[in-house]
Length: 393
Length: 223
Image (cartoon, rainbow over all chains, first blue to last red; front, side, top):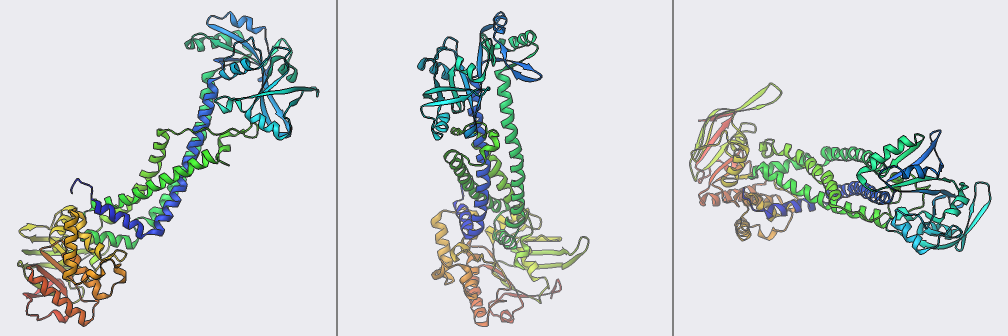
């Protein structure tokens, strides 16, 4: 056969698709929806992973949390003195922070107490400290955009009343709104002075929520972490890398579970196609037989079927990915995103960032197009290798 | 030109049972001859056409076309051989009904991937020859029996084959259309085509332009 492209064959394949319009439309719609579902999951997973990993980049290299009865409890600030003596530790700061549950909105915010004299390891916190006055006596509240929106819907536009564990009220004026490039980091965040945070959570002056440690040489993090563990056997030493791995694993696990379910449904679909629609109907068998009798090689018949399948699956791929992009990034993936977030009730919502990479698009392509093409070619091949003699009878 | 040497053909009817439809036949047809294979249904006429067209392989014996034995060639070579040498007019025409007249006629030319002008010229020639050009855009499903027959003949001749095989070509036609087909056969013979017609239609018997009539009876050639 000539190596040049046979445009007559391509035209014949396009004509065949047009002639079997209802079948073509049915397969395209079902395949597009399946690809859209698959793509949506990948896009959501990628966006959340991207957002979370960026958030995690802002974490300290090591966090030290005290445990009591297996539960996280406050730690004495005096521990810092011992920590700073460990070789390789650059800095150690006591953090006062916690989750503040806003009952009216059934939302949980992250409340952080800032000390302007401490070294801040996140860019966002550095910006907040530079812009607002968080001196010990300062009483002000700076919030992320998501928090602002929620507070506004409950008419908290000037100030906000925190309820202390003893039932008392701490009223702070709403001083400003901050944004960071990472929406997950800033969206559900409230920043107050460390003093105010202690008051709201009733944390004593010599206690802290946890202690964050900066290590001068990143390659020494593991060594410093093991020294910390020896020094504080009742504490949990958490490295940034460990958190990253655990978040990645959770998202990959959820993606994996979905992928398994998707492949099962995809194979069910192809079994239906294999059984009902592709190549094996008596009319199509007859057509294959006629073409063979007219001098078409098996290879040419398969090439024609390949063109048909490739055109359908590529159109479905483009449609499916297009639908998924619209669903995930324009509509913000209603219903599906909660499968990955899992804690949407606890945290205020955030926009899924646009993350689109060639690797994901290739993965979706190879999980859909070749499988469909194979499911079409195999029955056509079975029909094509049968004796064409029968058709002249 | 065509030589079937000691050819037998069996078909499997079950897992182990088979039925022999041709019994060691010998048949020679010269280039440019028009030969009628006569015989009742099931006598083995269509099987002989299938063997000549390399649509089936003999169980034993040789099928020699132009001094080449095609009895054991691969499917791909068989397709190539058919594309270059054979024009087949099927009993039920076997047109693709959802294609237009022009598209049906074009089918044997697609594997050749010829230049567009040449393809169009060849199609135009046969459509004119068999008076079907006014229906070129019409779907074959919408054609009358006679028109379908003309499309089938046009399709069988568009690749300018040396051999034209016709299997019960008038089985579905009335007498007028059958006579018209016979006229077209005469025309094809004048183009020096080798033509083999398998039929039991009496209209084909005793025609003066037929070179040979061979009677097939229960898989044997009657002398």
